[in-house]
Image (cartoon, rainbow, N blue to C red):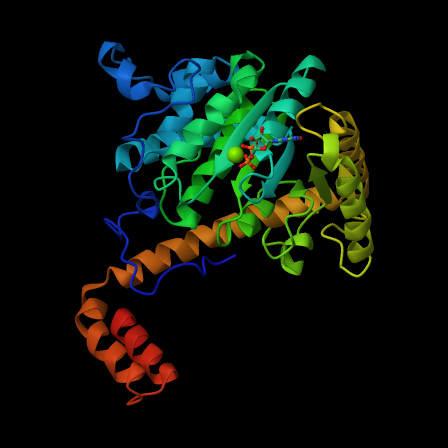
Length: 375
Ligand SMILES: Nc1nc2c(ncn2[C@@H]2O[C@H](COP(=O)(O)OP(=O)(O)O)[C@@H](O)[C@H]2O)c(=O)[nH]1
Ligand SMILES: [Mg+2]
């Protein structure tokens, strides 16, 4: 739950004002998930300034599934400006009664496993079946890998042209907690707009799998055969988060290897605790390229959804996730407040030096810092 990737010397920007401090950079980059605006930097000067909407207009537009307003609402809740934050929270408050009616699916896997290709294949398949799909990304490193995010968008070219789909890149980089807050709120906005399948892609960076696990119903781990488990970063811990393992690229010469890998993973899964009470996590194969296995994995997800709805596990899971969300924001806020505290700042360097040189034990150092903060 807590963001253990946080470096101890991290100091949040403008810390102390509110949760708006949790993510740096905010919406200044200006991408709003609208089709045809991927080249925002180029088209921006000719784009007319948008009229500011009122809270009622945001709410009505989202409920009417107006794509422009959906995108603007997400931009609003992603904003770091205090005025936007307050307005965004009021919009969300009014949208809450219309949320919750989607299948939330998280997808992770190493870069190159085929997540984006898979999401496009699954997304198109679901659109054909009459679903409305929202694709979101959670990538706390997205400033660094900005290029690849845009690359992903162009890779999902067919899906992004489909009016039944809505693709939104990751919020700008910042702490994982900050990115997560925005993504959770984006999920709610998309649900209120009538998107009934939410696909959340994340690269396995730091704690991001755990974070995405904590915001979805079903968590899918995409694998490739022959890459070696160490290379794929598939630690036991991540397999234990998954509701299904999907060996992608089961096509051409790779087909047999993929099927062998599936059997191996199924054997390994026997020894692991399942991620979801009453559900057995299994391994499957697919080819995001040819589409083989895509329908089958959707059937697995649908069965899962039906089963955990009936058993009450879904409701319990979502309640726990909501509380986790609350406390992760509290933690995020306290951390920011601590590291921005002037008194703490004035003694930190000395205390850090004393503790690394063995002059005081870590516990005493922590007590001194906390006393300074609370005092
Ligand atoms: N042969 C084959 N190649 C695939 C498949 N899925 C993805 N790829 C290729 O693998 C590469 C990485 O895919 P991408 O979707 O960008 O992976 P991501 O980094 O996990 O999002 C691309 O060149 C894809 O064309 C598949 O099912 N079969
Ligand atoms: Mg990708």
